[in-house]
Image (cartoon, rainbow, N blue to C red):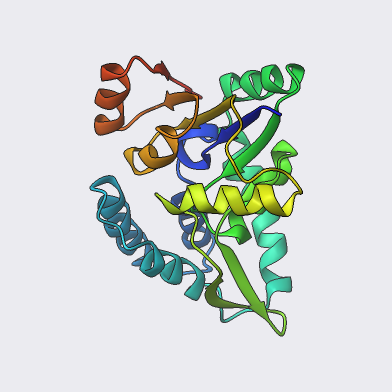
Length: 220
């Protein structure tokens, strides 16, 4: 078996799904405008590799706890059509198709919570490994169930997913991973075929030093 793994934000998507989602909710009157500033503060910490991922996921999910899940689902569907579909570039679609043609098993692996990422995964027809948003009595609880798929934890979350799928929990000999962020260096350095897509400054430098492929997937 050969794997092709894809990060979500700034990789398969030309943009960040969390930011796009909160912007959409503010624009349509679902959330107050100061949410944008809070999101920008978290984004700065992420770029600096100083993000407390548990705090960030709690911030994202707590915003959604006051309304039943049934009310959020149509909002999410409208958001996907309006803000996500236009952010998937031709190069991303072509790369997915090329891996499928080679018989590779494709997965999205992301730190974006499952309420967003699994819905986006359905657009691609791909399974998603992501932090699992807990639901209780028809509401998002604001909490994550289980491990958080971020930095080093992406490796263990991938191993658990492979084991649950009845496969070896060891990385296969041929394993591609596409990502934009230095936060993903633990998994990028563990696979046989790391690829930097729209890389941040640190990942760009690391990829050039180690002779990795560097790609630009932009929609504009």
